[in-house]
Image 1: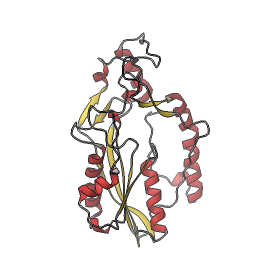
Image 2: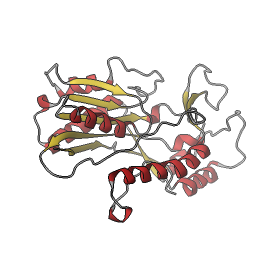
Image 3: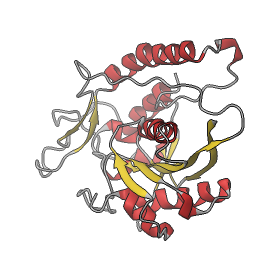
Length: 274
């Protein structure tokens, strides 16, 4: 028996926010002080560091669960399966449904349940739940799906990753230019074919690194101090990724028994093209 990704789908918003759209923003330092450079210089430096020139934002009427539903539909169609045969729906996210121009997260019911409802799946044996696992949430969802199938607890799972990060950013923070919106979904199932998922490597660093990403106050001290936004220590994350992500990839390859020379493509999640 092999465990494979048999269908994939994604939803990428059509609305494009280009770098020049940030020229009229009021960027501030973390202490609330002004920045000595004009926005054109700030944006150009951001592009030079990250390589990012544009990002996608969800339409005002859509939430994260809507994006996940649209991606899930495509994955189901791509796999050409009966939705009622799905044993688990696992949705990875961090902030739930945040409606446009609001700051409150809505995760009741969970996003996976909302997506199952939108798909009109009737089977109560299709278990829907969410995981909060940061950036690698979808990958962890795939690992969990694989574990269920290996244990004989499931034959087919739908794993979704969805987020509308544009709605939890501090517009006065230069880091807000990094974040965007979108969703992806995949069908994971057992097959009689060869190949499939060979091995995985997961690590959770929290001893010194737990608060490299955190919820913090706006750089604009005139705003409500009880409202929090996604914040990060970008340099620390960059340095962490250079060392630890490469090591995790090597450990995974070593476990698989495959030599790096046999690898045709590497897909890596990172907001910095370096």
